[in-house]
Image (cartoon, rainbow, N blue to C red; front, side, top):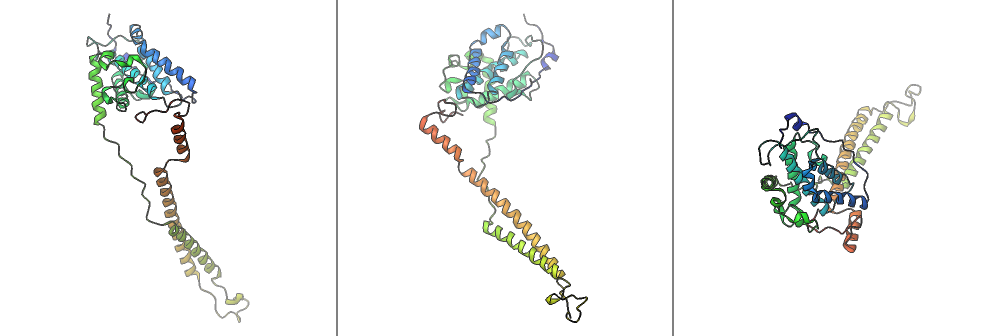
Length: 314
């Protein structure tokens, strides 16, 4: 029996509190992935007992919080969970049901933190979930037409079926819309090499040094201003001091110009050094990354002891 769900209940769509956990070891990650795979296999049972949303939200949050990147098959499980959860949300609003009336649901409606933290309702969350499925599917052998594990060579038997076989004709339309949104996204702008101001390093160093020399020279000139040549006292030794130095104006000018040159060339030197450092980082991998890549190439393993993914994986 279908009971109409009041609008306020549909809008009670509050994200759970999310605290990032410490990195998990491989056994803990395997347990989380195994629990998610069991939930995918038990979807029919969970649907009969109206537990899909609560169970799948919990598994998606657990997979997002394992503390390290999942391998491709773990991500394929995420894709299956996301589509099933999107279907459950759409059924709540009567979009993918035999009737146009929303399904019954009481209490607060949970949503996964990773995809739906900003969603305002079930439809918006379902759209975000399907967008993530399309983004994942585009990286597989079958592209957008094969969103689950058969496109990545994973062993989850439930994913050998098509979208229509697994989730029905309505989800084929919903997923097709998500695929169109993905294909219509603007291509990411390629970031070119960092530009470096055409000022050689030696010119910057020479400019700073020259500015400091001018400041020192100007300070000396200001220091001798009003004094007699030979070091005589102009007050008590007037006979020995017919004239005094008048270097205040020249000294002040040198200090001012030297300060401007020092600051200006110092800024130029700093900026160009930062640009050179960025250019160096973008042009070659770090020493640690090169060592890891060489170790993976020699052993076929990656950190954590799992097989290194194929080039099409992410």
